[in-house]
Image (cartoon, rainbow, N blue to C red; front, side):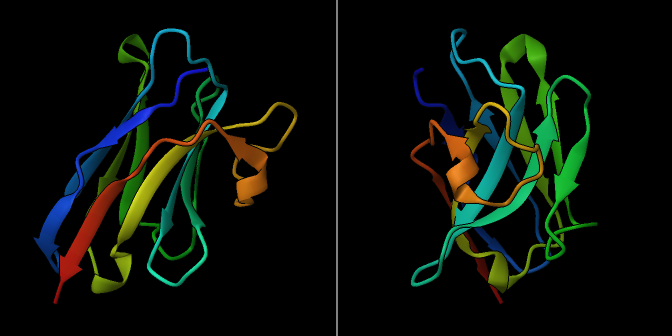
Length: 125
């Protein structure tokens, strides 16, 4: 499957908002899509995931209440609305689809495949 394309990153001040998009081609099918992020020198960590059939959503504790994941099935796109951004949210953000038979909401990068190239988010204090 073709990789999804992330967009929407940028530089904002603390307290600001950004909306990231993960656009997949028509042939890119998925039951669960996850957003991950990776800061320099750190491991990639899960941020949010959505079960696209049930609409169930999952969030890491560090972003719960501030980030919202959603989907537009007509556009085959998953969004990540990020509010009240903090400097520690600074990272490259990636989306990927969950591998078959893995639990949606898993934060293991091994459970995901077809990663996008990422979009950079920088939050200044």
